[in-house]
Length: 161
Length: 190
Image (cartoon, rainbow over all chains, first blue to last red; front, side):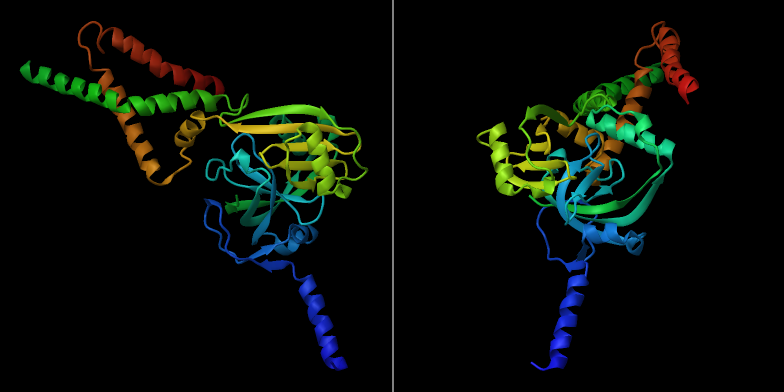
C-alpha cells in the first residue's frame, strides 16, 4: 500500500469514527404514536455534547429505558451510550402512554429536540413535582440556580421486548 | 291528551333501553373515573412496591461495577434473581434491571438499595385504557356515541314521571340543584 492510499484509509477511519449518526435497521416491538420516520439514530452523547446542532430538529435515539412517568406514562428516560447520560422523551399527556413495565427494555424513539430553561422558582416547582412523583422528600431551598436541560418532544417510539 | 301520552311512552322506552345499553360502559367509566380522579395519590394502572435493602459498599464509582458483580449483588437480594442489564445513573448510583421486571437502584458507596416491583392492576388498567381514550381509532367514535347516549338519558330522564314528582314539581328542584352544583364549583375555583 503506497503512502497516498494509506493516508486516505486513515482519514476515512477517522471520519467514520466521528460520525454520530448510525444507520439503523427495522426493529420489532410495540409501537407508540406515529411510525418512526428517520433511518438514522443519533447517539445521546452527541446530542448532549452539541445540542445546538440538533435543536429544533427531529432526531431519533435508541437506548435502554431507565424510567417511565409513573402518573400518566407521558415520558421515558433513555440511557445514553456513555455512563451517567440520559435524555427524556416527553410526549403529550394521553396521546402516547408508555407502560411502566417498559423500564429496562430498549426503545427507539424520535421527536424534536428542545431546550428547557427554568428560572429558580420554576426549577423549584419542577423538582418538587419530580420528588412527588418519586415519593421523595424535597427541600426547595436546595435549588439555588436556574436550570437548563434538553428534552425530546416525542412523536413516536418502538419499545423492543 | 292521547297524543301527549304517546310522546311520554316513547320517551320512557328510549330512556329504559338506552339505560340498558349504557350499563356496561357506565360501569367502566364510573370505576375508572374514581381511579383516575385520585391519580395524584395513587397509580391507577400499576401497583408499585418499593423495598429497601442494605448490600454493603460496592464500589467508589458506579461505572466500575461489572455485570458479574451486579449479578452477585442481585443474589443477595434474591437468590433466584438474574440481572438483565445495568446502567450507572451517576458516579454514586447504579441501576440494575432484573429479568423478572424488577429494578434495583443502589448507592454504590454505602450499599443502600431500593428494589422496585411494578405489577399491572388487572381490570382497572383496561378500564382506564378505554376511559382515557388511549386506543383512539374507532374507540373515539364509540366514546362519542356513549356521550350522546348519556345526553339522551339525561334529557329523557327528566320527563319520565309526570305530576308532582315530575319536572313540574319535585323534579324541577332536583334538576336545579344538579345544575347549581357545577356552577357553584366554577364560581369557587374557576
